[in-house]
Amino acid sequence: MPYHLFKCSECIPEREKHAVIKGPGEDLTSALPLGYLNTIPGSISERGCAYCGAKHVIGTPMKDVIHISHGPVGCTYDTWQTKRYISDNDNFQLKYTFATDMKEKHIVFGAEAILRKNIREAFEAFPNIKRMTIYQTCASALIGDDIDAVANEYMEEHPDVDIFVCNSPGFRGPSQSGGHHTINIAWMNQKVGTVEPEITSDYVINYVGEYNIQGDQEVMQDYFKRMGIQILSTFTGNGSYDGLRAMHRAHLNVLECARSAEYICNELRARYNIPRLDIDGFGFEPLGNSLRKVGMFFGIEDRAQEIIDTETARWRPELDWYAARLKGKKVCLWPGGSKLWHWAHVIHEEMGVEVVSVYTKFGHQGDMEKGISRCEEGALAIDDPNELEGLEAMEMLQPDVIFTGKRPGEVAKKIRVPYLNAHAYHNGPWKGFEGWVRFARDIYDAIYSPVHQLSKLDISKDEIPGNAGFVTKQMLSDADLSDEIRNDPNLREYTGKYSIIEDLQAKTYPEFPRSCHEVAV
Amino acid sequence: MASVATTDIVAYMENYIMKNCLWQFHSRAWDRLRQNEKIIGITSQLLCGEEVDLSTPEQKCYWIDSVILAENYKKNVPALADMSVEEIKDVMTQLKDRIDYLTVNGSLNLELTDKHY
Image 1: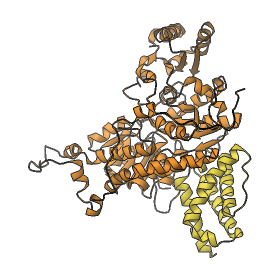
Image 2: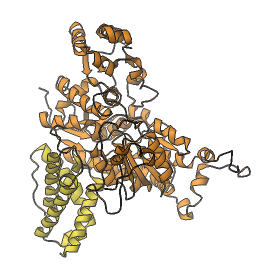
Image 3: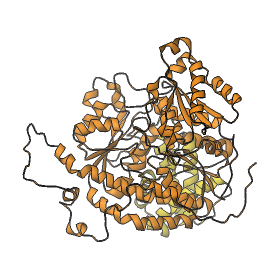
Image 4: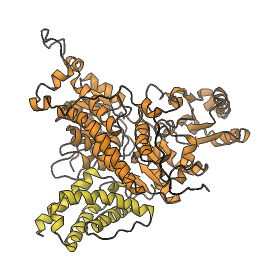
C-alpha cells in the first residue's frame, strides 16, 4: 500500500493511513486512504462539524425559510460573507441569519423559553415568511431541550406555519458529512409527502444535491426548462420549503452531489419507487452526457442535443482559448467532498491541467475511490488533512494553483500559491457550458495574475526588476505559445457578462404540449 | 480473438468506466453489485443487438447509463464489430468481474458492508 506519512505528522503516526500516492499500475485495491473517521487527536483538522453540514451546507440554501440555530450565536456565523448559495427571492436566506443566542444561564436553567421567544419574534419580524427550520447545536443537545415540543406547540397555535426540526448537533459524527446524512433522513421522515404539488409537465424531476453556488442551480434549471422539464424541487439550492415537501411526486431524481444527498435519493427510491440518476454538471462532455441521460429517460433526447449543440458552438472556442494557456499547469484539487471527483478527470481532459493532488476534508472512502480513479498516476490523495500537511504537500508538489476553501486558501497565499475558492467560487457560476469557461477564466487569472508574480519576489533578498516595465496576464501566458495558437482566429477569451444570473431569471420559456395531465392524489 | 487483444479491450473498457462514470460507486456492496450487473449486463445486450427490458423507471435508468457506455465502446473499440455475440459476452463478463473486483471484492472501502446507508 503506497501510504504517505508527512514529515510534519511523524508524531501522529496514525495519519499515515490517511494519505496515499497513486503509483504506476496501482488501482483502488492498492491505493485508498482511510476516510470518514474521527479526526486523530493532535491533528488540527480543517473539517466542519455535523451541525455545520446539516445547516450551512444543506438546510440554509432553502430560500423561503427562517433558518434558526438553537445555540450560541457563534454557531450561525456562516452567512452572506462566507456562503454564496444565492436565490431568486432576493437572497432572503443569506441576508438574514437567526440564532437563539444561548448563554451560560440557559445551559443551567434551560433554553426552551428563549427558543419559543425567538420563534415568535422571527415570524413577527418577517410576517410574509411562514416556514422555519430549527437546528440543534451541541449546547442545546447537551442540555436536552425538547425542540420538537416547542415547534409543535407553535404550529398548533399558528396553523399557517410549518417548522422543520433538525437534531444534528456538532458532535453527531466525525465531520459535516454526518450532518448531511442526518438532515437527509430527517427531511424525508418529517416533510416529504406532506404537500401535493401542481404538476405542469409530463417530465418531472427532483434536482438533488445542488446548492446554487453563485447561481449553478439557475444555470441547470435553464437547461431543464428549455427541455420542457419541471423541476419539482431542488434539494436544496434555490429550493422552496414546500417544493421539497412534494419530492415524492417526481418521476426521476437527478443527483448531482452524491456525497451530501444520495441518502434522500436512496430513500425516495425505496419508499416511492423514484429512480436515481447520477449526473455531472461540470465540464462540456460530462454535462452533455448528463443532459442527454435526462433527455433519454423521458424520450426527449433531441431537446437535450439541441442545447448541447448550441452551447458547445457558443462556448467551445472560449474554453479552448484558456485550455491552450493552462496546459500542463499543476493543480492541487483540495475541495470539501464531491468536487474532487466532479473535477479530477475533466479539468485534465478539457483544460489540460495536471491534477497532482486531491484531498477531501469530509468525504468518505467512496469519494476517494471516485477521485483517485479519475486522477492520473503520481497524484497524492489526502483524507482530512491538517494545515501543516497542506503546507508540506505544496512544498513537495509546487502547484501552480490550488482549488480549496477560503481558510486553507489564505494559508496557501502566504507561501505564494494562488488559490481559487472551490466551495463558493471566485466569479461563478462554474456549472454549465458558460460556467465552465468562467472557471477556466478564473484559473487563468489566478495563475497569470501579474500581481501574483510580483508577490513571489522577496524584497529582502531578491533583485527587483525595476526596468521590466508593464506586464499583462496575456504577456505572461502567451510567452511560450506557438504563433499558430496565439493567432488562432477560432479561439477567443471569455466574452460573457460580469453576471449571468439576472438574464436567466428574466427569461421566458416555450410551453411544450402535454400528452396527458396528471392529477395529484 | 487473441487473448491479449481481449485483455486490452477489457482494460480500455474498465478505464473508461473508472474515469468517466459514477454508477459503479454507489455506497454499499450490494448496491454496487446490482449496479454493475444491471448496467454492464444491458450494455452487453446493446452491443449484441438484443432487446432491452425498459418496463420500469429503474430499468430505464440502468439502460441510460448502458447506452452511454455502449456508444463509447462502439466508437473506440472497433474490434467489437468483428466479434461474435459469444465473444462480446465473454468480454463483458470479464469486464463485470473486473469492475466487481475493483469496487467490491477487492475494495478497501470499509463502509461497503455497513448495513445502513
